[in-house]
Image 1: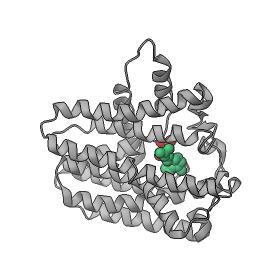
Image 2: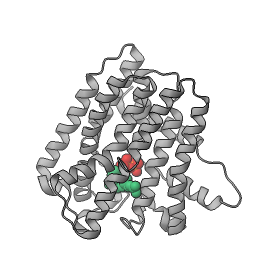
Image 3: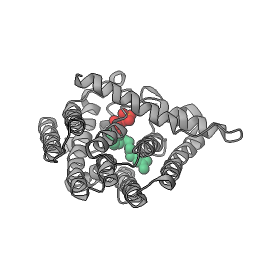
Image 4: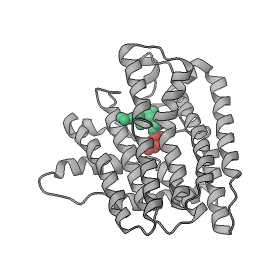
Length: 302
Ligand code: GRG
């Protein structure tokens, strides 16, 4: 099967899983549940759950990865909903659709983000009760929590927001901190959960490094697209960094060096994954897919 067909199939599978874990309708709080569903089902590449499933296939574990895939996409989506709010980036378009606060109002968008974050943990905890290997399950869950929190995504977003609010020009090291946490942390968790469920700590350490490289490369490409792409192609506004006078890693490196660095980091991530030994055709296939997926993100158009 060619890579694009396999990716399409895997995205479709991830979308079914994610939809299956969305909260049931309810009478009085139906608006927040609708807004949560709207945000999650608005589209998106489903990159993180697809990565999670591929890694899980590489290692094999009796514990199900599906609740983690759904929880990861809920956490990722909450971060986008909150990031789009007027108090943060004030964006009106996301995934080609009106942002959640445009569609449902600001208060409901805050609640939808809160609801998604909380429901992610409800989803994993419900599944944990049925897990055979509870310690492996809890290890994976606490990794996800950490990478999403103040020592991960929220921490990265904190410095990013503060710099913008106070007009502070970040140093290269500080920009790296922002990228490592705001962007790489959830990608690292996506790569590591499957290894933790299979209790392979050594592989998880290699995947954490690969996730760092992938995350920085992914964010560099995001910044490059903000300069070179169009709103139509991206499904979200472009040129926002320049408009907001925001210094990015690309403004430090210059666009040509940034492109080279992005390729170097993606290549390093692929190599690290390639260095992990797996045996059996199915596991080899999952590893090959994961490597191709990361290669395909170099020069991604959205
Ligand atoms: C509000 C706590 C909090 C955090 C917000 C996610 C985020 C942090 C900000 C959004 C803006 C941004 C540039 C984030 C970096 C990560 C990133 C490139 C997210 C977009 O991920 P994609 O491209 O999105 O996978 P889709 O829509 O395809 O799922």
